[in-house]
Picture 1 (cartoon, rainbow, N blue to C red):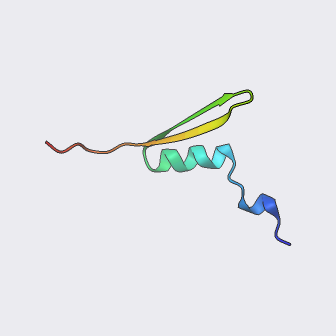
Picture 2 (cartoon, rainbow, N blue to C red; picture 1 turned 120 degrees about the vertical axis):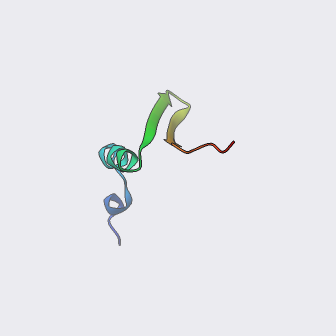
Length: 47
């Protein structure tokens, strides 16, 4: 069987990847409701 740990992505790695692409990471959690992970990408707007 495969090691389930090998498929997980730690928060530290997520933070590094987000920095590498000039994005932001927001993590919110509510007891009994779960956790939201939001990655916001920076983009240019066209006019």
